[in-house]
Image (cartoon, rainbow, N blue to C red):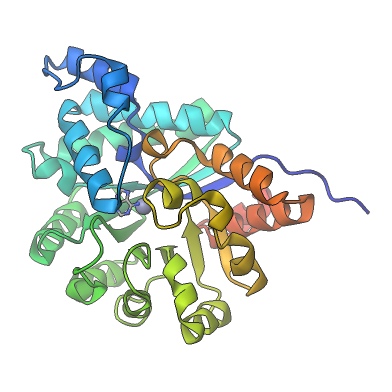
Length: 324
Ligand code: ADE
Ligand code: ZN
């Protein structure tokens, strides 16, 4: 029997809300907040979107956030993502939010987190899209700062679903964050971490063994270590893979070089995600469309990727059953 053709993703599990800040919104928020931009036009800004690696991207990602200042800005940013994701077929999103990208430039945690929460609170009613919120800590800032922010969040009135680790990877191994992840685990939070994007397989091992993460974000360098692949397969640890991001950050040369098919063949639980869609040329549906065109994915492969996303989510079993 022919499988139904699934063209749209249902679930997105690797999405930085700050990475959905589109150039147009940068200009709108600059006008609202009377910020003078270094770019005279949208085209001049867009001309900056050529990245040599993760760190050259992160420079622009953090710099552009200068225009996001008020609670309503955070809500507008988040609402714009939810609207676009829903239009692309997303029914559930587990969203990363980087508190330190804002507190480090003087924005109070309550303003930033509160604004994101305002939009998420209405997401099901407004867009038919359920969400979870994962606070990601910048691994190139001190672990003591991450611990302090986590403590503030745990004592505050916005509840979060999990924590993760992101930002510049090489030189900042997961082992630096054992205490932060222990506290999160003790408080019943879900645990994820970026690992094996630019960093070595050893960082993926550390994320699994020392931080006890439930999912690995990116993780594509795991393929360099057969024992690690076996571990990920045996424990059904999902990898939240972001193909257009991998190309734009030069983790791989072209989409044709993406190891997606090999990962599936080896039995890895791969999900497809957009990472920072405003910077990498597409939302999650664009990622799926690009892969489908590049690798001539068939209905069974697309269905597997969609099912993997549901399985890898932090939804309850009954909620997963509704999406399946
Ligand atoms: N922050 C936003 N996008 C990221 C990525 N691809 N890797 C690490 N940190 C990030
Ligand atoms: Zn990411």
